[in-house]
Length: 306
Image (cartoon, rainbow, N blue to C red):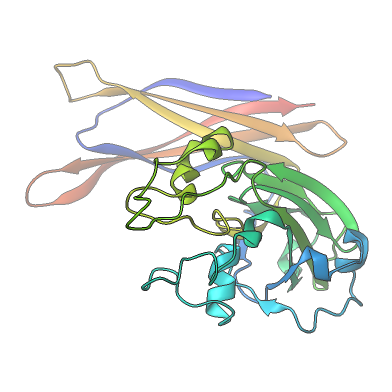
């Protein structure tokens, strides 16, 4: 179901702050806080891990000898932090005879163990990835829960069936580099700096410079890895997705604005849900000397989700 609260007219000078958007049964409590998974990660080249994803993500798997992974971060970030390779931005350290091109031609396992908060009891538990370069298989406690393809694609996976609040859970992610890493031009006095970028634009223009630019040698792993935040979250049976807030000023006037809020509300349970979608807007006034709240209002919209 898509719920839209539109044309909400508010007096505004600087901006409108959306404090909370929720769509939950009236008697439900607010969801517990998210848990960021930034510590305890391990990394290993897939060529050194013959086991299946189900085995790597099992409780009894031995990750001894794996590198201590930096998350968020790239594969090369981890290998530099673990002193496998030197700092690539220093001197000639970026040369392929020092940091090899093979980094972008293999996949990597990331693995961690996390305790699911007891506060997540009787809620839907979600595993969230804000960015993996380039593609990934995601496993939790021996089961594959989903895939990601594209460095800027968010991965949000319902892992309620795989975990138990108060108990540890194993998360394993098989990360594969971009399919078109290109062949870099090595900067030398004789050969010059070559062209800027190249075929990597096919996989995503934002990482185009990792193939090499006039100011940068090739990044040997092309920024492969879990490069954005990973976190757990918990919700009730209704999930509010992708809120979009737009404003329409009746220029040249700036004393009011029509504010449109759109969200997608999804019922992830097996039963119909009747509830209330609540939106709190706070209007702020700003000048050279001060910023203070001048108005606040809460709007509610009845919703039925099948």
